[in-house]
Image 1 (tube, rainbow, N blue to C red):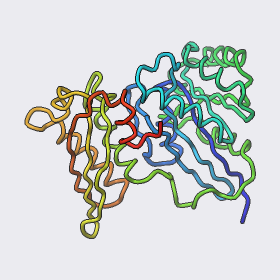
Image 2: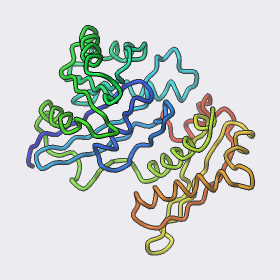
Image 3: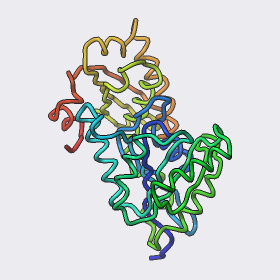
Image 4: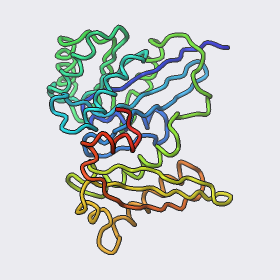
Length: 298
């Protein structure tokens, strides 16, 4: 089997630094949900980019906060899983913003000190800062950690992404490709569908609602040629949240379904009948039994 440069790269960083936007941009298609709100990602999503002589498998992790600040079981679980993802990869990309170094950034660097593999510092959103500020920030980070490379980028605008890819390939081992060249993710379609629905909930609802919901795809079947029927349950923690998700005369759930269906159809390449149902699982984020029912391995 032909050996090329191939390996796993995990992006890690505090909430809302643009990890999901970057992975989507590198893969060339939406596989991870994005939102202006922090801590959108709950699952570790793998995106696959294949070239003639290289294959990179990107892991998009949930935003990291100090474990002492994690208030629920689901938050504690996602942070531990994100930190665990550092163990089995070939390269780590620490993603930060061009702002003063935060306690979350320092917490992440502390957890990287035992990692014996290349660690890149990826400074995102450079279109929002001056060159002089960027140089000062690079030096501050180098005083905290011996990064292999420091690469400033703009994930949204695509600035320096080819440089980032090229540098990462240089530091990957020689290995046969892990996946077929036509794959862009290893995530089951049910997981991606659930994430796309959850993204619309993030974008359309306010306050605590998006963080209090879990989406579970209960039925996924081809009804006839070019039409897939999807039934998904949206679970809230409280009855009042259920009412908000449904909305007056069912308007909110219709809007969630309409916008999600567009993205799902684009991803699946066929027509979709999306059937959404809203239920209540009281305080599910704090309950081990509920989390296990949802598929989390605690």
